[in-house]
Amino acid sequence: MSTSLFDRMLARIVRLGVLEVVHADGRVAKFGLPAPGFPQVRIRLTRPGVTTSILRDPRLGAGEAYIAGDLTIEQGDVMELAQLLRANQPWEAGAKLYAPSALRKLLRRAIAAADQVNARARSKANVGHHYDIGYDLYALMLDGEHMQYSCAYWSREDMTLGEAQEAKLAHIAAKLALKPGQQVLDIGGGWGGMAIYLAKHFDVTVTAITLSAEQLALAVAHAKAAGIGDRVKFELADYRDLPASGRRFDRIVSVGMFEHVGRPQFDSFFRICARLLTDDGVMLLHTIGRFGGPGSTDAFTRKYIFPGGYIPALSETVAASEKVRLIASDVETLRLHYARTLRAWHANCVANRAAIEALYDAKFFRMWTFYLAGATAAFESGGMGNYQIQYTRDRHALPLTRGYMGEVEAGLLESRPAPALISAD
Image (cartoon, rainbow, N blue to C red; front, side):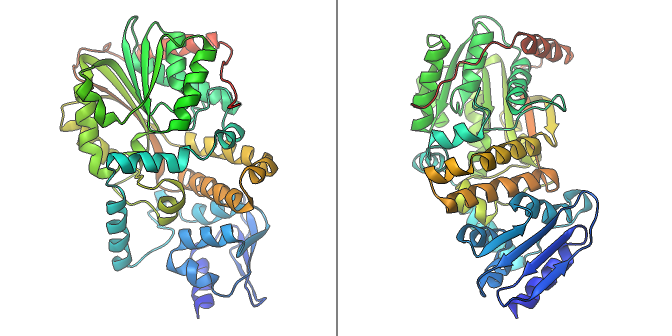
């Protein structure tokens, strides 16, 4: 019974491109028709009950079947499988890839809401779940220069991943409108790439905070290697603890961290940022976001990738910041930049498959590439994008027009000093 329901589900989804399914009993079902730009994929289900698991929760069920080897791909790869399914149901068309029942929707939202209540201890554990799994993995996957684990900025078609990540840093730095002597706070500092970039290119002092002990240690080493350890300080701290110090900052930047805050904490996040920002200060928030209205985090991502995470809608983000009178002085939507970034990361992982499997195992490699493939499809055809929101507390804090951004950005990209990051050894 479940195999017939499974086939009916795929028949509704796959119209363009071809998906062949070899069921556990040897029966072959074929869906869709060849079409330009749509891949042809053949999968094999090796266990009879796998269709039931996928029907129960398609993304989680398919992901776990792929990790376990119960779903194998005989033609194409996991990236093409995710592309085929998602591109047939683009967000712009108003279609949903899967249509869960009203009860299932309610249950998912309740579970997701409970998961997003991020107390300090849980926030630290959630960050460690993803970022403390080993620098070696990220060194194999990311750009290798600035170690940016967030959306790059592809200002040219022919950019390398490293060039696109440096362009992202310049793009953000230009929006901060930095001035000599300013104090900058980087919330979620990662491996130090943003803080080091700002300190190298501007006469500013940067404090970067993170909840990842492994990232902290490497960020300190990176800053020392760059020769700017005196102007960059890294702290293992929760953003909620900073107001007690009495410190205030001329500029605040946060890249790829807001997705970990959790919806129940949005108001407190912006309230704290407003308290930390000087009266004429500027803040730049770079975050993954949803097109359209609020939603919920899928079960696969919650379980395997980002526990406690939530991708906010633009409306939710701005509504929370409005409560503390932060002015959204500039908003930019990066529609396809993360899709390109994710494809580059996936390609790096595939090229380094043997090394990644040696670090972990084959199941981890399948889990990680399933995550990257699904995320790519969500940014190419689903409802995901990136937002860069510039905030001020005073309408007079920035020039009247946006021209200063382009001038600073162009100047930064003309200089391009040599990278100074080091290995984890």
